[in-house]
Length: 273
Image (cartoon, rainbow, N blue to C red; front, side, top):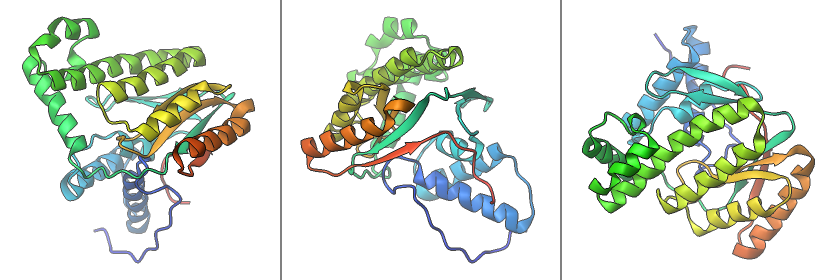
């Protein structure tokens, strides 16, 4: 039996910034309850419990990725997850790069219908294309058949099909240490999220465009569900300080909004300290 607890929750994860703050709360509390009650659950099981809470209690029809990253993270590694089989691998991040998070200071609300609408469009595309999931159609097959889809549905599905392909390429490139090509995929992803999935906003586009123009930046894209929040930028370690200063200065000049910049690295998943 899991007992009740009296708890104080303190976090430095920005709320409403597209950085999976809800998943962080879920994984923090399931870790606390696990420690308090003395039961054991592997990290993936804890992630699935968090996803269930998000789906059934919050009402956001999210996948498993955010909770999975919070539960299963490994220091200085990226994670590669198969959301169908739930098999996963860790992929080393090069020591010569830093992850820089840039908060646009534009909050977004994921409980608006936009996320669920886009998921519904992709499910409609899969039905019309007669596949179980958009992962079951190749990029070339999709482009041969996409004319049977309604225009908006086709754009949403094209982003997903091509992003799955980019993800597979990204894992290969990281394992090869090809950060330049990996960064180009990040830039392509942002353009697709902007033009096909249509979840960006002017401030995110400016932040990504500025970042991509500065020395040392391999790639930049929005992160989270979009409509505000943050970009994630892959930056050479020796350029991090100047990059962060220039990005904040130019963005504030262009928008009148004061951003917050976080210099990060891959971290271990949630657990008791």
